[in-house]
Image 1 (tube, rainbow, N blue to C red):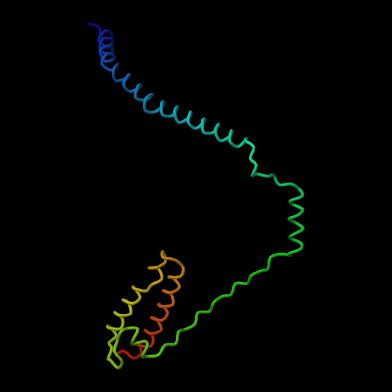
Image 2: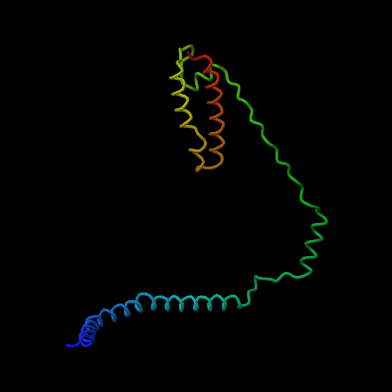
Length: 166
């Protein structure tokens, strides 16, 4: 047997075995790639035709603007004048003044009780965790404002008690 005949017979046998695999791959390509794309394309063109056909229908509620409408708008603007400019006032944060009794009540200490720095700091952090504005931000602006006020009170009370703590 010659080398060229050997290669020819080997390739022929390989082609016989690869035939079903090639058909399977090509068939899969058409079934899973081309066919869905064709259906999608047809569906999109149908939807586009449907949209354009609806837009061209006469609509009694739609009225095109005319030059007279624009002139009327300009006349009304001249009568009313330009809209007033609203100045935004910057709020200066005020330091809360708090009495020592209300500070102790806020931190739930009894009046005249000796307080250590550790106790005060632990209670301060606990109150901040409970009343921080970021915790209630998802509930709305009102809750956030209330939490900010409460946090300011806590900070003021902490400053008041910090000087007294041993």
